Length: 338
Image (cartoon, rainbow, N blue to C red; front, side):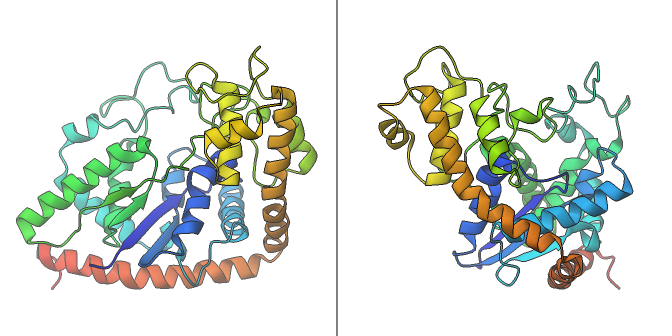
């Protein structure tokens, strides 16, 4: 069977180094492998946290320019805007009619959001919180199955959502005959989970309390040097890789490895005669060498909004053709296609 890859990214501001090393860099590599590829700007998912109209419109174009600057090829991969393909929400409704409420209650879709919003307790289906944040995994499942995706590039933290996708596919197939494939995670040893530079016990995040905790892929060279120089490490001067006991310096090693395609052992060998101060300088130079060309391409692409919209329109049309065909087949199986 044909290999089909699906992945999505929310338009919630400029991607940071964690987004780049955890997803985008891997997406670029996958373009060299056989099969169909769908990369979605999942704007419907981003509505779970309300944002202004101006922010949303700007962010969709920002993320499009970022992906192109990182060398996502819109001829090789279908790069499109989720909300322009209504079959995502149509299939999500079908899935919601077939997945028990109790199954959703066991998914960790609230994790990591409660602190940001100062909620005192986890929202329940009959308590506070918005329905969209509760049913988020249904739309995620629809995103994947709409294109009959066989592979999803994701970190281990996303595995639980893929379990729901495969459970639903099996259940649907038992009733209606084989239609949806089982989806596998594509994991990569370089799937770095980059930590916050100021608080290396948590992941680097756009919602981080300190801007110094994250490096955005459009940051200028001086900003990158300053953020890495101020990165929290520890009192030991030697550079070693020990994420449990030395999360700060290990985070710098992860960044070095992810951008240079080397192992932690190789990174530490390179730094064996350096203290952490000198190593920060080395890592800053590696980051600058890698991100500077991306930043320049981004600013060039971002100036031509019409071109960005045309690229999205082209991707939307390609995605819609497959989505419509697959959803009409689902309608036929359910008996609602006359």
